[in-house]
Length: 544
Image (tube, one colour):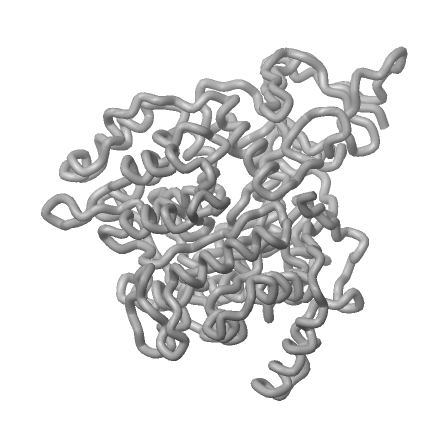
Protein backbone atom coordinates (compact mmCIF):
# COMPACT_ATOMS: atom_id res chain seq x y z
CA UNK A 1 0.00 0.00 0.00
CA UNK A 2 1.22 3.49 -0.91
CA UNK A 3 0.48 6.13 1.74
CA UNK A 4 0.99 9.87 1.56
CA UNK A 5 0.92 12.33 4.47
CA UNK A 6 0.81 15.84 3.06
CA UNK A 7 1.00 19.40 4.33
CA UNK A 8 2.58 18.70 7.71
CA UNK A 9 5.64 20.20 9.37
CA UNK A 10 8.17 17.36 9.17
CA UNK A 11 10.63 17.40 12.09
CA UNK A 12 13.45 14.92 11.59
CA UNK A 13 16.71 15.90 13.33
CA UNK A 14 18.61 12.88 11.96
CA UNK A 15 18.17 14.26 8.45
CA UNK A 16 18.17 17.92 9.49
CA UNK A 17 14.54 18.54 8.48
CA UNK A 18 12.17 21.07 9.98
CA UNK A 19 9.94 22.10 7.12
CA UNK A 20 6.55 21.71 5.48
CA UNK A 21 6.46 18.72 3.20
CA UNK A 22 5.04 15.33 2.30
CA UNK A 23 5.90 11.93 3.70
CA UNK A 24 5.49 8.77 1.66
CA UNK A 25 5.19 5.21 3.04
CA UNK A 26 5.20 1.90 1.22
CA UNK A 27 5.29 -1.62 2.70
CA UNK A 28 6.18 -0.40 6.17
CA UNK A 29 9.08 1.84 5.12
CA UNK A 30 9.61 5.51 4.38
CA UNK A 31 10.27 6.06 0.68
CA UNK A 32 11.28 8.98 -1.50
CA UNK A 33 8.63 10.73 -3.57
CA UNK A 34 7.47 8.15 -6.16
CA UNK A 35 7.32 9.36 -9.73
CA UNK A 36 4.00 9.22 -11.53
CA UNK A 37 2.21 7.21 -8.83
CA UNK A 38 -0.90 8.07 -6.90
CA UNK A 39 -1.23 7.09 -3.25
CA UNK A 40 -3.73 4.45 -2.19
CA UNK A 41 -4.45 6.46 0.98
CA UNK A 42 -3.84 10.13 1.76
CA UNK A 43 -3.87 12.05 5.04
CA UNK A 44 -4.11 15.81 5.17
CA UNK A 45 -1.86 16.75 8.11
CA UNK A 46 -1.80 20.48 7.53
CA UNK A 47 -1.38 22.23 10.88
CA UNK A 48 0.36 19.19 12.37
CA UNK A 49 3.92 18.22 13.19
CA UNK A 50 5.15 14.92 11.80
CA UNK A 51 7.88 13.16 13.78
CA UNK A 52 9.36 9.68 13.89
CA UNK A 53 7.84 7.43 16.55
CA UNK A 54 9.33 8.24 19.95
CA UNK A 55 11.82 5.94 21.68
CA UNK A 56 11.90 5.51 25.48
CA UNK A 57 15.36 4.33 26.54
CA UNK A 58 14.63 3.49 30.20
CA UNK A 59 11.22 2.34 31.41
CA UNK A 60 10.43 -0.57 33.74
CA UNK A 61 7.77 -2.50 31.82
CA UNK A 62 8.62 -6.15 32.54
CA UNK A 63 10.41 -8.42 34.99
CA UNK A 64 10.10 -9.65 38.54
CA UNK A 65 10.06 -6.20 40.14
CA UNK A 66 7.29 -4.92 37.88
CA UNK A 67 5.12 -7.97 38.50
CA UNK A 68 5.70 -7.76 42.25
CA UNK A 69 4.54 -4.13 42.11
CA UNK A 70 1.35 -5.21 40.35
CA UNK A 71 0.65 -7.80 43.04
CA UNK A 72 1.61 -5.46 45.89
CA UNK A 73 -0.73 -2.63 44.85
CA UNK A 74 -4.03 -4.03 43.59
CA UNK A 75 -5.77 -0.91 44.94
CA UNK A 76 -3.94 1.17 42.32
CA UNK A 77 -5.63 -0.52 39.37
CA UNK A 78 -9.45 -0.22 39.49
CA UNK A 79 -9.48 2.91 37.33
CA UNK A 80 -7.93 1.21 34.32
CA UNK A 81 -10.01 -0.07 31.46
CA UNK A 82 -11.05 -3.69 31.39
CA UNK A 83 -8.49 -5.88 29.70
CA UNK A 84 -9.51 -7.06 26.22
CA UNK A 85 -10.46 -10.71 25.95
CA UNK A 86 -8.17 -13.42 24.59
CA UNK A 87 -4.89 -11.84 25.72
CA UNK A 88 -2.25 -13.80 27.55
CA UNK A 89 -0.41 -13.54 30.87
CA UNK A 90 -1.57 -11.57 33.89
CA UNK A 91 -4.99 -9.92 33.92
CA UNK A 92 -4.54 -7.68 36.95
CA UNK A 93 -4.38 -3.92 36.71
CA UNK A 94 -1.91 -2.14 34.47
CA UNK A 95 -0.89 -5.16 32.42
CA UNK A 96 1.65 -5.79 29.73
CA UNK A 97 -1.15 -5.34 27.21
CA UNK A 98 -2.09 -1.94 28.65
CA UNK A 99 1.54 -0.87 28.49
CA UNK A 100 1.62 -1.19 24.72
CA UNK A 101 -1.71 0.56 24.28
CA UNK A 102 -0.82 3.51 26.51
CA UNK A 103 2.62 4.02 24.99
CA UNK A 104 1.25 3.94 21.45
CA UNK A 105 -1.38 6.50 22.37
CA UNK A 106 1.44 8.92 23.26
CA UNK A 107 3.29 8.38 19.97
CA UNK A 108 5.96 6.04 21.36
CA UNK A 109 6.83 3.07 19.18
CA UNK A 110 9.98 1.63 20.85
CA UNK A 111 10.62 1.12 24.60
CA UNK A 112 13.61 -0.40 26.43
CA UNK A 113 13.20 -2.13 29.80
CA UNK A 114 16.40 -1.26 31.72
CA UNK A 115 16.84 -3.95 34.39
CA UNK A 116 16.23 -7.67 33.84
CA UNK A 117 18.18 -10.14 35.93
CA UNK A 118 19.81 -12.77 33.68
CA UNK A 119 17.91 -15.63 35.32
CA UNK A 120 14.62 -13.77 34.70
CA UNK A 121 15.29 -13.34 30.98
CA UNK A 122 12.91 -15.99 29.67
CA UNK A 123 9.96 -14.70 31.66
CA UNK A 124 10.78 -11.14 30.61
CA UNK A 125 10.72 -12.17 26.95
CA UNK A 126 7.33 -13.82 27.43
CA UNK A 127 6.05 -10.57 28.93
CA UNK A 128 7.53 -8.43 26.18
CA UNK A 129 5.90 -10.69 23.62
CA UNK A 130 2.56 -9.87 25.24
CA UNK A 131 3.04 -6.10 24.80
CA UNK A 132 1.30 -5.04 21.58
CA UNK A 133 2.24 -2.45 18.97
CA UNK A 134 5.56 -1.18 20.31
CA UNK A 135 9.00 -2.68 19.68
CA UNK A 136 10.97 -3.42 22.84
CA UNK A 137 14.10 -4.89 24.33
CA UNK A 138 15.83 -5.06 27.68
CA UNK A 139 19.11 -4.48 29.47
CA UNK A 140 20.38 -7.36 31.57
CA UNK A 141 21.98 -6.66 34.94
CA UNK A 142 25.60 -7.49 35.83
CA UNK A 143 28.00 -6.14 38.43
CA UNK A 144 27.17 -7.87 41.71
CA UNK A 145 27.25 -11.55 40.81
CA UNK A 146 29.78 -13.96 42.30
CA UNK A 147 31.24 -15.24 39.02
CA UNK A 148 32.15 -11.75 37.81
CA UNK A 149 33.46 -10.51 41.14
CA UNK A 150 35.63 -13.61 41.56
CA UNK A 151 37.04 -13.07 38.08
CA UNK A 152 37.84 -9.45 38.89
CA UNK A 153 39.32 -10.38 42.27
CA UNK A 154 41.63 -12.91 40.59
CA UNK A 155 42.56 -10.14 38.14
CA UNK A 156 41.42 -12.18 35.17
CA UNK A 157 42.02 -10.54 31.82
CA UNK A 158 39.62 -8.06 30.29
CA UNK A 159 39.17 -10.59 27.48
CA UNK A 160 37.60 -13.05 29.90
CA UNK A 161 35.16 -10.41 31.11
CA UNK A 162 34.33 -9.57 27.48
CA UNK A 163 33.63 -13.26 26.81
CA UNK A 164 31.49 -13.47 29.95
CA UNK A 165 29.41 -10.54 28.70
CA UNK A 166 29.11 -12.15 25.27
CA UNK A 167 27.90 -15.41 26.82
CA UNK A 168 25.39 -13.44 28.88
CA UNK A 169 24.01 -11.79 25.74
CA UNK A 170 23.63 -15.13 24.02
CA UNK A 171 21.85 -16.61 27.04
CA UNK A 172 19.48 -13.66 27.62
CA UNK A 173 18.98 -11.98 24.20
CA UNK A 174 19.36 -8.54 25.74
CA UNK A 175 20.20 -5.29 23.98
CA UNK A 176 22.60 -3.90 26.57
CA UNK A 177 24.22 -4.22 29.99
CA UNK A 178 22.99 -2.45 33.12
CA UNK A 179 25.10 -2.21 36.28
CA UNK A 180 23.16 -1.23 39.41
CA UNK A 181 25.06 0.01 42.48
CA UNK A 182 28.17 -2.01 41.53
CA UNK A 183 29.38 -3.92 44.56
CA UNK A 184 26.87 -2.20 46.83
CA UNK A 185 24.13 -4.77 46.34
CA UNK A 186 26.60 -7.58 47.07
CA UNK A 187 27.84 -5.72 50.16
CA UNK A 188 24.25 -5.29 51.33
CA UNK A 189 24.08 -9.07 51.81
CA UNK A 190 26.82 -8.63 54.42
CA UNK A 191 24.64 -6.05 56.24
CA UNK A 192 26.43 -3.06 54.67
CA UNK A 193 23.81 -0.30 54.35
CA UNK A 194 25.86 2.37 52.58
CA UNK A 195 28.47 1.96 49.86
CA UNK A 196 30.45 4.72 48.20
CA UNK A 197 32.55 4.72 45.05
CA UNK A 198 35.72 3.57 46.81
CA UNK A 199 34.33 1.30 49.54
CA UNK A 200 35.28 -2.35 49.14
CA UNK A 201 32.92 -5.32 48.93
CA UNK A 202 33.49 -7.69 51.86
CA UNK A 203 35.27 -10.92 50.82
CA UNK A 204 36.04 -9.65 47.32
CA UNK A 205 38.16 -6.59 48.11
CA UNK A 206 36.79 -4.71 45.10
CA UNK A 207 35.51 -1.16 45.02
CA UNK A 208 32.52 0.14 43.10
CA UNK A 209 34.95 2.14 40.97
CA UNK A 210 36.95 -0.98 40.01
CA UNK A 211 33.85 -2.98 39.16
CA UNK A 212 32.13 -0.47 36.93
CA UNK A 213 35.26 0.71 35.10
CA UNK A 214 36.24 -2.87 34.22
CA UNK A 215 32.68 -3.57 33.05
CA UNK A 216 32.57 -0.30 31.14
CA UNK A 217 35.73 -1.12 29.18
CA UNK A 218 34.62 -4.70 28.54
CA UNK A 219 31.20 -3.62 27.24
CA UNK A 220 32.94 -1.31 24.80
CA UNK A 221 35.13 -4.22 23.68
CA UNK A 222 32.05 -6.25 22.72
CA UNK A 223 31.26 -3.59 20.08
CA UNK A 224 27.60 -3.42 21.07
CA UNK A 225 26.21 0.08 20.37
CA UNK A 226 25.00 0.92 23.89
CA UNK A 227 27.72 1.78 26.44
CA UNK A 228 27.50 0.55 30.03
CA UNK A 229 24.20 1.73 31.54
CA UNK A 230 25.20 2.67 35.09
CA UNK A 231 23.01 3.07 38.17
CA UNK A 232 25.54 4.72 40.48
CA UNK A 233 25.96 4.19 44.21
CA UNK A 234 24.41 6.53 46.80
CA UNK A 235 21.13 6.97 44.94
CA UNK A 236 18.84 9.52 46.58
CA UNK A 237 21.24 10.68 49.31
CA UNK A 238 22.00 14.31 50.15
CA UNK A 239 25.39 15.31 48.79
CA UNK A 240 25.50 12.49 46.25
CA UNK A 241 26.36 14.88 43.42
CA UNK A 242 29.96 14.27 44.49
CA UNK A 243 29.49 10.58 43.61
CA UNK A 244 28.20 11.58 40.18
CA UNK A 245 31.12 13.94 39.54
CA UNK A 246 33.66 11.34 40.66
CA UNK A 247 32.01 8.70 38.48
CA UNK A 248 32.29 10.93 35.41
CA UNK A 249 35.99 11.44 36.20
CA UNK A 250 36.47 7.69 36.63
CA UNK A 251 35.10 7.09 33.10
CA UNK A 252 38.34 8.66 31.78
CA UNK A 253 36.76 9.91 28.59
CA UNK A 254 35.23 6.57 27.58
CA UNK A 255 31.51 6.32 26.68
CA UNK A 256 29.22 5.84 29.67
CA UNK A 257 25.50 6.29 30.26
CA UNK A 258 24.26 7.36 33.71
CA UNK A 259 20.72 6.27 34.58
CA UNK A 260 18.05 8.42 36.28
CA UNK A 261 20.55 11.21 36.96
CA UNK A 262 18.08 13.40 38.85
CA UNK A 263 18.40 11.03 41.81
CA UNK A 264 22.12 12.00 42.02
CA UNK A 265 21.76 15.77 41.66
CA UNK A 266 21.59 16.63 45.36
CA UNK A 267 23.71 18.92 47.55
CA UNK A 268 23.67 19.65 51.28
CA UNK A 269 22.75 23.34 51.37
CA UNK A 270 19.97 24.83 53.52
CA UNK A 271 18.64 24.03 56.95
CA UNK A 272 17.51 20.56 55.84
CA UNK A 273 20.96 19.92 54.30
CA UNK A 274 19.27 18.94 51.06
CA UNK A 275 19.42 21.05 47.92
CA UNK A 276 19.67 20.87 44.14
CA UNK A 277 23.18 20.57 42.74
CA UNK A 278 21.91 19.99 39.22
CA UNK A 279 23.81 23.03 37.92
CA UNK A 280 27.10 21.53 39.08
CA UNK A 281 26.17 18.16 37.57
CA UNK A 282 25.16 19.74 34.26
CA UNK A 283 28.37 21.76 34.07
CA UNK A 284 30.38 18.55 34.43
CA UNK A 285 28.32 16.86 31.71
CA UNK A 286 28.72 19.76 29.32
CA UNK A 287 32.48 19.39 29.70
CA UNK A 288 32.41 15.58 29.27
CA UNK A 289 30.61 14.71 26.07
CA UNK A 290 31.51 11.02 26.47
CA UNK A 291 28.87 10.73 29.20
CA UNK A 292 25.11 10.77 28.57
CA UNK A 293 22.26 10.72 31.08
CA UNK A 294 18.60 10.00 31.30
CA UNK A 295 16.94 12.25 33.85
CA UNK A 296 14.39 10.18 35.79
CA UNK A 297 12.18 13.21 36.34
CA UNK A 298 9.98 13.32 39.43
CA UNK A 299 6.38 14.39 38.90
CA UNK A 300 3.87 14.91 41.68
CA UNK A 301 1.85 11.69 41.70
CA UNK A 302 1.31 8.39 43.44
CA UNK A 303 3.74 5.80 42.13
CA UNK A 304 5.86 2.81 43.08
CA UNK A 305 9.63 2.50 43.06
CA UNK A 306 11.09 -0.61 41.44
CA UNK A 307 14.83 -1.23 41.54
CA UNK A 308 17.46 -3.97 41.50
CA UNK A 309 19.40 -1.82 44.00
CA UNK A 310 18.17 -3.69 47.07
CA UNK A 311 20.49 -1.67 49.31
CA UNK A 312 18.65 1.51 48.37
CA UNK A 313 15.24 -0.14 48.59
CA UNK A 314 15.90 -1.57 52.06
CA UNK A 315 16.76 1.93 53.22
CA UNK A 316 13.60 3.28 51.57
CA UNK A 317 11.13 0.93 53.25
CA UNK A 318 10.42 3.31 56.19
CA UNK A 319 9.24 5.94 53.67
CA UNK A 320 6.79 3.61 51.91
CA UNK A 321 3.37 5.11 51.22
CA UNK A 322 1.25 3.06 51.76
CA UNK A 323 3.23 1.21 54.44
CA UNK A 324 4.18 -1.92 52.61
CA UNK A 325 6.95 -3.13 50.34
CA UNK A 326 8.82 -6.12 49.05
CA UNK A 327 12.50 -7.04 48.91
CA UNK A 328 13.63 -10.22 47.21
CA UNK A 329 17.20 -11.33 46.86
CA UNK A 330 18.97 -13.40 44.27
CA UNK A 331 22.36 -14.30 42.88
CA UNK A 332 23.87 -10.94 42.07
CA UNK A 333 21.09 -8.36 42.18
CA UNK A 334 17.60 -8.98 43.52
CA UNK A 335 14.84 -6.39 43.45
CA UNK A 336 12.98 -4.10 45.80
CA UNK A 337 9.49 -2.66 45.40
CA UNK A 338 8.45 0.29 47.58
CA UNK A 339 5.31 2.38 46.91
CA UNK A 340 5.76 6.12 47.21
CA UNK A 341 3.84 9.38 46.87
CA UNK A 342 5.53 12.50 45.51
CA UNK A 343 3.76 15.54 46.98
CA UNK A 344 4.07 19.14 45.83
CA UNK A 345 3.91 20.28 49.46
CA UNK A 346 6.85 18.07 50.51
CA UNK A 347 10.16 19.95 50.67
CA UNK A 348 12.30 17.03 49.55
CA UNK A 349 9.99 16.03 46.69
CA UNK A 350 9.87 19.63 45.49
CA UNK A 351 13.68 19.83 45.40
CA UNK A 352 13.76 16.59 43.40
CA UNK A 353 11.25 17.96 40.90
CA UNK A 354 13.27 21.14 40.43
CA UNK A 355 16.60 19.31 40.15
CA UNK A 356 15.35 17.14 37.31
CA UNK A 357 14.10 20.09 35.30
CA UNK A 358 17.40 21.89 35.87
CA UNK A 359 19.27 18.95 34.35
CA UNK A 360 17.01 18.95 31.30
CA UNK A 361 17.45 22.68 30.81
CA UNK A 362 21.15 23.12 31.70
CA UNK A 363 22.63 20.22 29.70
CA UNK A 364 23.25 22.05 26.45
CA UNK A 365 23.08 19.23 23.90
CA UNK A 366 19.76 17.35 23.63
CA UNK A 367 21.75 14.43 22.17
CA UNK A 368 23.35 14.01 25.61
CA UNK A 369 20.25 14.06 27.82
CA UNK A 370 17.37 11.60 27.51
CA UNK A 371 13.72 11.96 28.35
CA UNK A 372 12.65 9.61 31.15
CA UNK A 373 10.81 9.53 34.45
CA UNK A 374 12.45 6.17 35.19
CA UNK A 375 8.89 4.80 34.97
CA UNK A 376 7.46 4.17 37.48
CA UNK A 377 10.12 5.40 39.93
CA UNK A 378 9.87 9.15 39.33
CA UNK A 379 6.41 9.05 37.80
CA UNK A 380 4.32 6.92 35.43
CA UNK A 381 5.15 7.38 31.75
CA UNK A 382 1.61 8.65 31.25
CA UNK A 383 2.84 11.97 32.74
CA UNK A 384 5.18 12.55 29.77
CA UNK A 385 2.91 15.10 28.03
CA UNK A 386 2.89 17.27 31.17
CA UNK A 387 6.67 17.09 31.35
CA UNK A 388 7.01 18.07 27.69
CA UNK A 389 4.88 21.12 28.48
CA UNK A 390 7.12 22.12 31.39
CA UNK A 391 10.25 21.90 29.26
CA UNK A 392 8.66 24.04 26.56
CA UNK A 393 7.30 26.82 28.79
CA UNK A 394 9.15 28.96 31.34
CA UNK A 395 5.80 30.44 32.38
CA UNK A 396 4.39 27.01 33.19
CA UNK A 397 7.47 26.20 35.27
CA UNK A 398 7.13 29.51 37.11
CA UNK A 399 3.49 28.76 37.90
CA UNK A 400 4.48 25.39 39.35
CA UNK A 401 7.35 26.94 41.31
CA UNK A 402 4.92 29.34 42.95
CA UNK A 403 3.14 26.35 44.47
CA UNK A 404 6.25 24.80 46.02
CA UNK A 405 7.39 25.38 49.62
CA UNK A 406 8.98 28.82 49.72
CA UNK A 407 12.36 27.59 50.98
CA UNK A 408 12.78 25.37 47.91
CA UNK A 409 13.17 28.36 45.61
CA UNK A 410 16.37 29.38 47.41
CA UNK A 411 17.91 25.93 46.85
CA UNK A 412 17.41 25.63 43.10
CA UNK A 413 18.35 27.71 40.06
CA UNK A 414 15.17 26.80 38.21
CA UNK A 415 13.51 30.23 38.47
CA UNK A 416 16.44 31.88 36.66
CA UNK A 417 16.45 29.46 33.73
CA UNK A 418 14.46 30.86 30.82
CA UNK A 419 15.33 28.24 28.21
CA UNK A 420 12.34 26.68 26.46
CA UNK A 421 12.72 23.50 24.44
CA UNK A 422 11.70 23.71 20.80
CA UNK A 423 9.82 20.96 18.99
CA UNK A 424 13.06 20.21 17.15
CA UNK A 425 14.88 19.70 20.47
CA UNK A 426 12.06 17.50 21.78
CA UNK A 427 12.36 15.37 18.65
CA UNK A 428 16.14 15.21 19.05
CA UNK A 429 15.94 14.07 22.67
CA UNK A 430 13.20 11.47 22.10
CA UNK A 431 13.99 10.24 18.59
CA UNK A 432 17.44 11.05 17.18
CA UNK A 433 19.41 10.64 20.40
CA UNK A 434 17.91 7.25 21.42
CA UNK A 435 18.47 5.98 17.86
CA UNK A 436 22.18 6.74 18.20
CA UNK A 437 22.51 5.50 21.81
CA UNK A 438 21.19 2.02 21.00
CA UNK A 439 22.39 1.78 17.42
CA UNK A 440 18.82 1.64 16.11
CA UNK A 441 19.67 2.81 12.63
CA UNK A 442 16.36 1.68 11.15
CA UNK A 443 14.19 4.05 13.24
CA UNK A 444 14.07 7.45 14.93
CA UNK A 445 14.23 9.15 11.53
CA UNK A 446 12.02 9.81 8.50
CA UNK A 447 14.58 9.33 5.76
CA UNK A 448 14.26 6.88 2.90
CA UNK A 449 14.48 3.29 4.11
CA UNK A 450 13.59 3.97 7.74
CA UNK A 451 10.86 1.95 9.41
CA UNK A 452 7.58 3.83 9.02
CA UNK A 453 7.10 4.53 12.71
CA UNK A 454 5.47 7.95 12.57
CA UNK A 455 3.72 10.18 15.13
CA UNK A 456 1.55 13.10 13.97
CA UNK A 457 0.51 15.78 16.48
CA UNK A 458 -1.89 18.66 15.90
CA UNK A 459 -0.10 21.90 16.75
CA UNK A 460 -1.67 23.37 19.88
CA UNK A 461 -0.75 26.04 22.39
CA UNK A 462 -1.44 23.50 25.14
CA UNK A 463 1.61 21.31 24.59
CA UNK A 464 0.49 18.71 27.13
CA UNK A 465 -2.78 18.19 25.27
CA UNK A 466 -0.91 18.15 21.98
CA UNK A 467 1.40 15.30 23.04
CA UNK A 468 -1.30 13.46 24.96
CA UNK A 469 -3.51 12.94 21.92
CA UNK A 470 -1.65 12.41 18.65
CA UNK A 471 -3.86 12.64 15.60
CA UNK A 472 -2.18 9.65 13.96
CA UNK A 473 0.43 7.08 14.91
CA UNK A 474 1.77 4.63 12.34
CA UNK A 475 3.70 1.50 13.36
CA UNK A 476 5.57 -0.21 10.53
CA UNK A 477 3.37 1.74 8.13
CA UNK A 478 0.08 0.61 9.70
CA UNK A 479 -2.23 3.17 11.25
CA UNK A 480 -2.55 2.11 14.90
CA UNK A 481 -3.75 5.32 16.60
CA UNK A 482 -6.27 7.88 15.47
CA UNK A 483 -7.21 10.93 17.58
CA UNK A 484 -5.39 9.60 20.63
CA UNK A 485 -7.02 6.15 20.62
CA UNK A 486 -5.69 2.79 19.47
CA UNK A 487 -7.71 1.54 16.52
CA UNK A 488 -5.54 -1.38 15.46
CA UNK A 489 -3.29 -3.75 17.39
CA UNK A 490 -0.11 -5.11 15.84
CA UNK A 491 2.63 -7.36 17.21
CA UNK A 492 5.82 -5.47 17.96
CA UNK A 493 9.35 -6.78 17.59
CA UNK A 494 11.90 -7.63 20.30
CA UNK A 495 15.34 -6.14 19.75
CA UNK A 496 18.59 -7.76 20.88
CA UNK A 497 22.32 -7.86 20.19
CA UNK A 498 24.58 -10.88 19.68
CA UNK A 499 28.26 -9.94 19.87
CA UNK A 500 31.03 -12.39 19.02
CA UNK A 501 32.92 -14.01 21.90
CA UNK A 502 35.15 -16.98 22.68
CA UNK A 503 32.76 -19.80 23.57
CA UNK A 504 35.37 -21.50 25.75
CA UNK A 505 33.97 -19.35 28.58
CA UNK A 506 30.83 -21.50 28.47
CA UNK A 507 32.76 -24.49 29.83
CA UNK A 508 33.76 -22.49 32.88
CA UNK A 509 30.25 -21.13 33.33
CA UNK A 510 28.67 -24.58 33.01
CA UNK A 511 31.07 -25.99 35.58
CA UNK A 512 30.41 -23.04 37.89
CA UNK A 513 26.63 -23.65 37.80
CA UNK A 514 27.09 -27.37 38.38
CA UNK A 515 29.35 -26.84 41.38
CA UNK A 516 27.68 -23.83 42.99
CA UNK A 517 24.00 -24.52 42.33
CA UNK A 518 23.77 -28.15 41.33
CA UNK A 519 21.61 -27.29 38.33
CA UNK A 520 22.34 -26.94 34.66
CA UNK A 521 23.08 -23.44 33.38
CA UNK A 522 20.88 -24.24 30.37
CA UNK A 523 17.83 -23.86 32.63
CA UNK A 524 18.50 -20.13 32.75
CA UNK A 525 19.17 -19.61 29.04
CA UNK A 526 16.66 -18.41 26.49
CA UNK A 527 16.48 -21.08 23.81
CA UNK A 528 14.76 -20.83 20.43
CA UNK A 529 12.26 -23.50 21.44
CA UNK A 530 11.17 -21.54 24.52
CA UNK A 531 10.21 -18.40 22.64
CA UNK A 532 6.84 -17.67 21.06
CA UNK A 533 6.77 -15.67 17.84
CA UNK A 534 10.49 -16.07 17.16
CA UNK A 535 10.04 -14.39 13.81
CA UNK A 536 9.43 -11.14 15.68
CA UNK A 537 12.96 -11.00 17.13
CA UNK A 538 15.24 -8.51 15.36
CA UNK A 539 19.00 -8.49 15.88
CA UNK A 540 20.62 -5.06 16.20
CA UNK A 541 24.02 -4.89 14.53
CA UNK A 542 27.17 -4.41 16.55
CA UNK A 543 29.61 -1.66 15.66
CA UNK A 544 32.20 -2.30 12.99
